[in-house]
Length: 450
Image 1 (cartoon, rainbow, N blue to C red):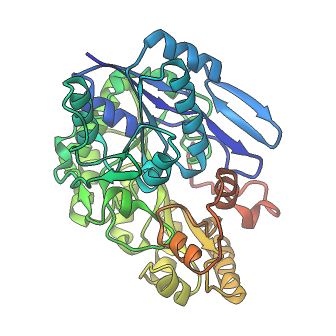
Image 2: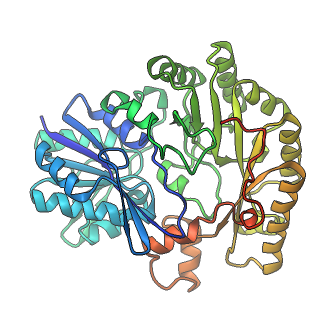
């Protein structure tokens, strides 16, 4: 069987970037679960294994030192190396690892996957940064790719695989998985779960219940059209949920097998199907799982109401983040294409305060066509919601990430003349808590339990 190495690369953070966090690499773990029976598989999570922190000028590299990565590659002798690029701002790290692996063995096959590879596969392949890219969901694609390599039947006809042939980039799209319940749980058996749970950086910059916690994903796909987000391109427009029974059993498995009682529901549309979501909450309550959990990814306020929020709190929710985006209706619905109501936002903020359920909000300013007055309205709203209801504000600059409509708008209108660098993407996106940091050293509400 093939020796296959899956790598979560080190991360490079500039001084103006968001704080570093380690995390359970669910994307790689789902891939691993799909292919572990047909290959000799190892996972190298550089944010955990032989972890080091190296300062270089205006940035810091977090993760396994490159010399140690080279040793591990030489020891394992993989024929295929899969490298994830979870963030466009970290693409340089994947390229460095690809080059490192090729210098050790020019014959091994380097495959890029993850969100960035899904939207930038043409550029990555043109630059010869890798041999192949897995575009979109990777479970079925990577399985078929390994079978094709192992059985010498090739990969040119496999949907979801992008490659360069001569001067052309070849790619045939793959349909998205419709029945997510057919997927195995992430391959937690291939990692040391305790090592993750004991890591000092675990979800450190993402959650107030970061210690001893884990992420879960209950759905894929997004039917909405917000111009700053590329999720619909990497996971499709159709909302595809796990069943409530699957989600509850997954949580129960993690509680009973690993003793984990803190969870992060990472999918931004977890609450989209009201009936399913209530069934998940009923399952958590009915099984007396006694967990704490949050929603850190920014769900829509218009999917919430008092009844649901009350049940969420009963089921163990301690922290909710919504995507408000703008305090101006024109910007919100005509520019961002959020298509929601600020009146609903105010209602949810008031309700969460009454329930003593911590609410956080994402705001984004600086869109093409947005005026300074409209930016001021967003900042005013953020301050108002914090003052009245203790809604913690997280302010972002509108950043033209690859694969988004915002990127195309900026390119087509000459706002950006060349592709943003990793440093520009890293420092331009993250301005957490900017509004209040200068005046308030600690803005967390007493509602939250660590």
